[in-house]
Image 1 (tube, helix red, strand yellow):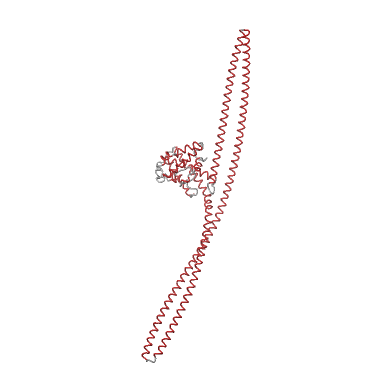
Image 2 (image 1 turned 45 degrees about the horizontal axis):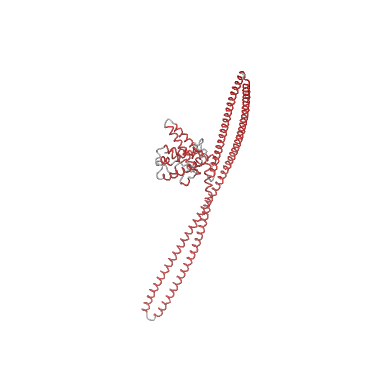
Length: 513
């Protein structure tokens, strides 16, 4: 189970944490120590140790790649988003500053207007109070003057009443004035609070301005860092292009060497054909000589028969019979030689055709292998916004292939995986991990994975053999029998549907031949 999760973690996306990659190396080392300490090792243990060693090596390669490429990818991918966010932030801050400035000006105008209004109301109240006091004093004076003649008692009573009335009026006026003053003080206090709020908003705006300046300084530092990273990336890109040109030159030299070898083979084939033609001509000349001997023997037989017919001499008859036997033996030997020459010619022709067929198949296999290599290289370069270094990409794809086979081995042999495998952990024949949607499964991706030139176990297999082994693995009946008990119940329907898509892709490849 630990090995299963380790294999799943090794197929995480390429931007994972390098420290996690280092931890994988520690886990593989621990597993290797456990296997060694468990006792004598059998063949499966040795295979597992070799696979753990390969995984450890690939993890170290991946960690080395992260030290150079991940920072570049993240910085260059986030550059455009960071610039947009900076523009949006600057626009929002400018808009906020305008609103705060307008609100501050409006508050100042309202404060000035309220102060003027309070001052005006205070003056009006004071003026009205003074006028009211003057009118009352005039009325009291008039009343006193009118009632002086009525007598001292009435005058005193009137004076007391007037004083009481005056005190009430003064008291009422004082209350009104106090109320007006309190309202004016409350208005002034409110205006002061609004002024304090405006000052606080101004301080907040100043703090935002300072933070903006600090962010601009940080962004400038980030731009400088990105410039340095871009320079390093350009150096790496230049190095990669140099390596690419060197590989192209090596490929060109190899193709030239192969063309020269093909020309040499063609020359040797022409020389062999010439030798075969010469041998056929010589054989025909020998056959013509044997035919001439047979003709001469037949001529002698005819002459002897003619002599027998004429003279009936026993000696002549004996010589004629000997000549006839000699002619028969010569004719049989010539016929046997002709048959032997014909058989040798057929064997040489069959051998020549077999050699030509083998050479043609070798050329076709070499051309197919080179086409697969070039296609895999082009797809690897075109599948990413910033291409990996060639060696790291090749190791990454080999890692996908090895993890694919190891996971299938675990699915077949590990009985502890009882309804514990999730859909995103299942090994599909594609260089995409993890698979989260059925739309990610395509014919092109399955074909690219199955015929990847560096995939373990397919180096000496033909296209037909590769497809046959894969269709046995993904056949619906065999797949349901083996995998249904391994998958989580909520993920099994989706996994079964995805397996059907993969099986249809393999069937299409088999139909294409």
